[in-house]
Length: 116
Length: 184
Ligand SMILES: [Zn+2]
Ligand SMILES: [Zn+2]
Ligand SMILES: [Zn+2]
Ligand SMILES: [Zn+2]
Image (cartoon, rainbow over all chains, first blue to last red; front, top):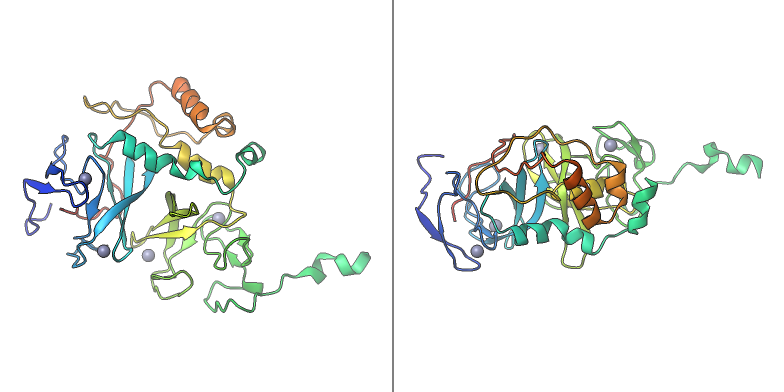
């Protein structure tokens, strides 16, 4: 955590309005709302401050080799993407919804999986 | 038949509408995958810009913002990170550059290996985190064929039953490219 970066004790989610504590249950700083998993575009890809400020929608859940989950966000204003860790109190239903959404409309017949 | 159908006479033609002139573009626009070394033809069913290997889904960091713009100077390998869908239901592969950690999302092509896509989606099919903390677990094994052939829910259950000890859920593993967390 950089000392120059303000990390308020609580923030208000730009999407659902939830008042969220700045740190998760494990003591890690949060970068997204634990309820709707939305974020805000205030840090750019290189780690500097982003002027955009747009809302960032969670678009994908990725599993790291060690088993840790990552949440990928995309800014609705400028389309920039970012990733961040999943906190243990993040909404499981929303997470699962993001994870399985591609399976709801697979671009190939699912029987194909048996042939590969 | 005979000569006319010999492989030598059926060299795929470069598509005239696509004007890639980047370095790795070789004969007929084919490129060599940076990860698995597969020679990938440029023509891809379902997309105008084939930018990742259909076998391992690895890409190369050459585009900046628009697919095909070739504006990025990084040229790092971009490993597939996950999947997402657009609002119209189209699938996108999320890539992350192993050199500069930039992310991008690209349409899947019609001949991308389906099992690879599915393997990623199988990844999250694991028990939700317990608030009491994470139990340790060995590294993830590759998705087995039996899990991949079953339906999504069945696969999840069988994986779960077969590996009851593998209940790792964690935001804790640091990885290359972690940036400072955003504050809201
Ligand atoms: Zn929220
Ligand atoms: Zn933005
Ligand atoms: Zn490859
Ligand atoms: Zn790069």
